[in-house]
Amino acid sequence: MIDHDRVFKELLSTFFVEFLDLFLPQVASQIDRDSIQFLPQEVFTDVTSGEKKEIDLLAQVRYQGQETCFLIHIENQSYTEKTFAKRMFKYFARLHEKYDLPIYPVVIFSFDEPKRREPQNYRVTFGDFNVLEFQFAAIQLNRLSWRDFLTQPNPVAAALMSKMNIPKLERPQVKAECLRLLATLRLDPARMQLISGFVDTYLRLDDTEKQVFESAISTMGLDEQEEIMEIVTSWEQEGAQKALERVALNLLREGMTNEAIVRVTGLTLEQVQQLQAQLQQEN
Image (spheres, rainbow, N blue to C red):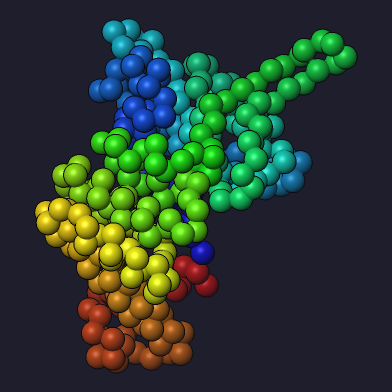
């Protein structure tokens, strides 16, 4: 299972300014970029259902040239939900009550289906009397064409192209183009790995698609080919590592000693102990 909220939060918190530049340039132009402060994750309890909800990302920023602050609340919604707009309003109301600051609410709709336009407002009326009109900025990825972002020199574009409206036959091409764009950005290794990992998470190719993907890479420049093949190699190494960890977890469940698991899998003792701690937390 993919923890969509965690994956998107990691991407957006790392490339927050780049996200604003790409999708909300009018907001990006108004903020002091050195003032960005991510606030602790807020947990709200829904008294009706008893569920606990965590908001995804909350940043406090200053207006450019001013001491006045406002909040930017970004929520990733990975599935369709009839009452989502109402939930966004509840988040807004509680955050406004707690911080007493203006709030700019943003939603990324990241599910693949349905492709109909999602509501981006919550309204309360009595007859012709409009009691409340709450709106939020909405970015619905499955209604965006990946081709419109090909020339954007932006790491968020390189990542989110993998979640846009992609005809099935174009999946290998999109993955190749995501990596081509990433290769041109010259990011540090950690940030490069974050973007490439995001793309590989959401664009897993079957064997036939992999052949088309490799063919698309072969038409690129030599430097880009080398950079992309390094990324692909890192994916393969990471996949092998995860496979060994799954084997080790199964052996731990069966009661095999840590030392024996080290001999069988080739993992270090420290890695096996970390997996053991993870297993204990799950139980």
